[in-house]
Length: 157
Image 1 (cartoon, rainbow, N blue to C red):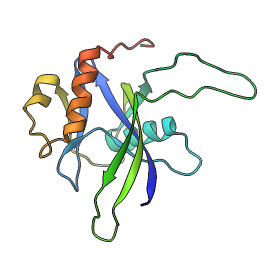
Image 2 (spheres, rainbow, N blue to C red):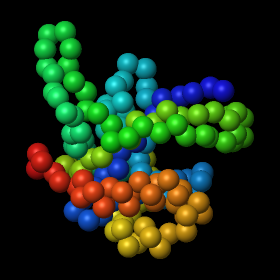
Image 3 (cartoon, helix red, strand yellow):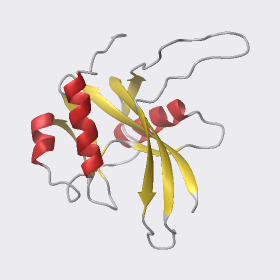
């Protein structure tokens, strides 16, 4: 089965997360998409977030050690990585996404190149969404964990 690399950003602001209504799936998801050739996962997450929401974002650092030397530099570590099964759709066969998932916060809003319906949702509003109908269960569980951990600290703001 083919595997493709993707990057996703959960954009958090205070006690809310920004989710998009996916056009094909009709479900609420964080912004994200395929990593383009020559892009790092962080660059892809930032690009996808901007293209889909119009927000410039700052990735919340999850690093234990930060290296910045002539021969090696640290990249922001993902909050988590997922192996996602993507069903066949029209002429696209079933495949998998290896998804680098980041936490971020908004730093500036600009005009979005794409037109996605989007909403800032609280934990309580997410809880009201029907799992695997309005929102994937794993998305809901991830968001509950994020809100529970109070990972919403914006150290660089």
